[in-house]
Image (cartoon, rainbow, N blue to C red; front, side, top):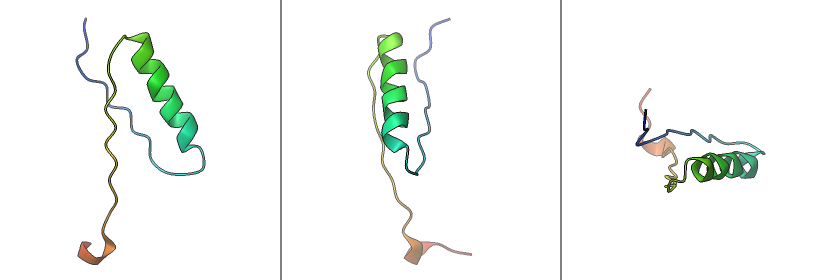
Length: 48
């Protein structure tokens, strides 16, 4: 089976660098490229 995409959620916290390093190691293992998407919630537009 050949995977085309792997979703690797990183989240937030003190260990973000280690999580990114883990994602890079997984990409290296599968000889694939990595894309990083960073997003942040705008609390002013958040509806409760």
